[in-house]
Length: 143
Image (cartoon, rainbow, N blue to C red; front, side, top):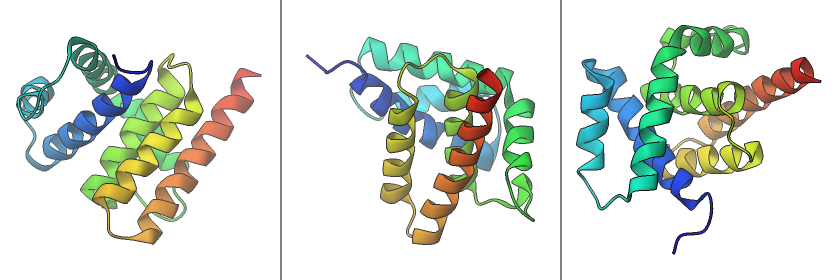
């Protein structure tokens, strides 16, 4: 049986691909997600988590982009590359809006995806820096 939380890692990869494809071509996010889910064997927990996060991201997309924008220095969300924007949206949603129990694991999984799909060390550092700033500000607000 899968370790607790292991399904979230798989769902995050599926969501990264979904957000990337959605950003490229538009359409219905859930149709894009369904296409991604068909590419491999995915258990019920992964599907359930992926759908709940996709819904949360779409419901909060303006707020997510605003938060990302507030943490970009001399840059705009619209100018980010599609993969970077997808990773930042996913990470921001989980760090700020979700009740995922292990926020540290979110960082690890997002950076693992960045290492797997991006070929730029600068992009990986950039994503880590932006998400770290977002997480720190969010923690300060909750205290």
